[in-house]
Image 1 (cartoon, rainbow, N blue to C red):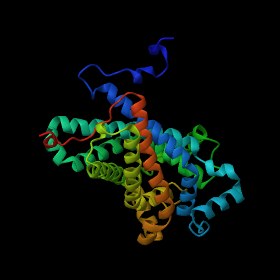
Image 2: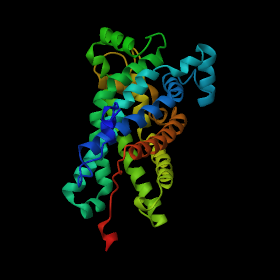
Image 3: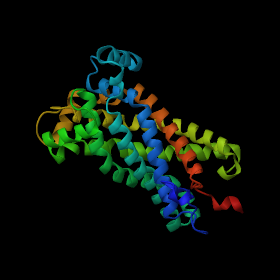
Length: 323
């Protein structure tokens, strides 16, 4: 069997000579992003189930992450911790495809437009802009899947799977029901992603600078260690920044939350009911654990998959260091 006949083998094809960052590179980045997000979010589904329950019913689930897991298992069985797994794995594959692929595309386009020296001086701004643009596009595709996931977690009897949940939500709420949480998901995911990529990039650059080495001068295992370490730092920072909107997103998808009326009115009602301090703190510790682990895993898996696909990951370069 030839390599070209293997399903997905096109991603293993090298880029044309002299074109390091071409369409094939972006496809590899998108595929690696989809894989890393699907694996990490899927693996942390039990944590997310408990986190969502804590946000929706803090009175009942008031004994922390482990206590929350025990309560869910005792009342509903171990399989309850996998509620929404299908929507999570598929939804975050789609989101990761557009997010990681989009960030690579937008930041490389910015560098090619500005030149290496100016891009190096403005790399944090490029990270922030690329992440915001990529995440906005990704959330258009993620929002319906996230709505089904949250509805199924808040009401375990709502559906028997992703397809069933889609059908029931469409029938009950129409297309608009899938996007009732679009503004909260943007408010959560865009700052989260901006912080994630900007902090991870800065942390990784600081680690490389302290070592006096560039990524190309180090082994793949060392680069993986840098990705994991910087990913943990970025994940905790991003979790804290995005937590209030994450709480609102969890609550807005609960049936009847915030009363009747336009979405902004419902969101304001929920914010008033919960209170600012609770929006910022309830469920924050499990979210930090979840997002810190998840983000480290994402960058580690992303780099690994890119290496397997034969792609050399883009890094900002200081042209003055060559002089």
